[in-house]
View (cartoon, rainbow, N blue to C red):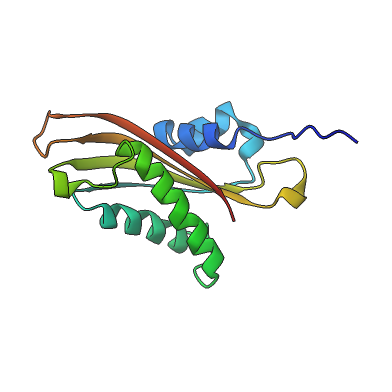
Amino acid sequence: MSSEIHQKAFGKYATLVALMGQETALGLMPEHEAFKVVTGKVGSMDLKKVISSVETAAKRNEVINADIYRETHALYHTIIEAAEGVTRGKLSVGEVMRTVGLSFAVVRGFPYEDPNEGEWIAVCFYGTIGAPIKGKEHETLGLGINHI
C-alpha cells in the first residue's frame, strides 16, 4: 500500500474561480466539476461585512449547511485565513483607513482521491485594497483552505 497522497489542486481551482469565473476555471480544470461553488463580490471598510457576505452566500447557495455548526465554523476559519492574505496578516481594514473591493469564491468538495480524507472548503479573495480614494488601491489575493 502506497503512502503517497493524491490530491486535486483544490486551492488552485478556488483561485481560478475567484480570478476568472467558474466556467473558465472548469474549462481549465474539469476534474473539479463535482465541487460546490459560489461566487460573489463585496466592497467595504468593515471586515465584518466581508465575512458576513461570504458566509451568507455560502449558506444561501447551500455550499454549507447553516444548521450544522462545524460547517459554519470551518467556513469562518477559512474566510479568516483568506482575509489574512488580503490584509497581509493584519486583520484590520477601516480602522487603519483601508478599503477592499473583492471578488470571492467558495469551493467545497473532496480534493483527495481517498474519500476518507473528507470534504474540504476553500475561500479565495481577489481584488483591491488601499486608501479609500479611487485610484489609491492595489491588487490583493488571499486563499484559505480548511477541512470540514
